[in-house]
Image: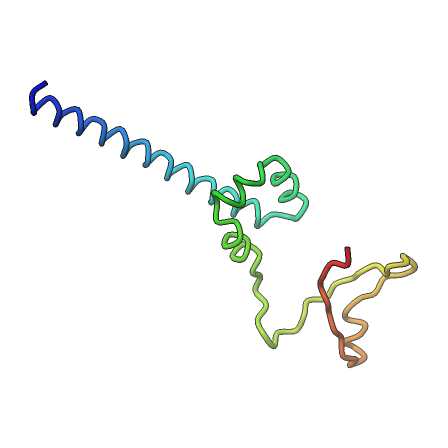
Length: 116
């Protein structure tokens, strides 16, 4: 083979490689955008979608934690009043509303965690 033919072949391989990498990059950006959009939906919708995605794909290939922190950041800042909400007591005997405590000027401590 002559030098021109080898050079042309290398260019062809390089073009195919760049095209393949470009397609992979576009698919990755699309997947990140789609996952971000799903994260902004209700927790039920997010759970349904995540149940269908293999774990390693979501956590190793996509920037899951970064997307999650941005999608679920909310608009509250330090010093803002907490939005009102209602929760059912553990024994399911009644419901408790945050505004009932704030109207009485009682301090309220919210602890979010898992005891399982």
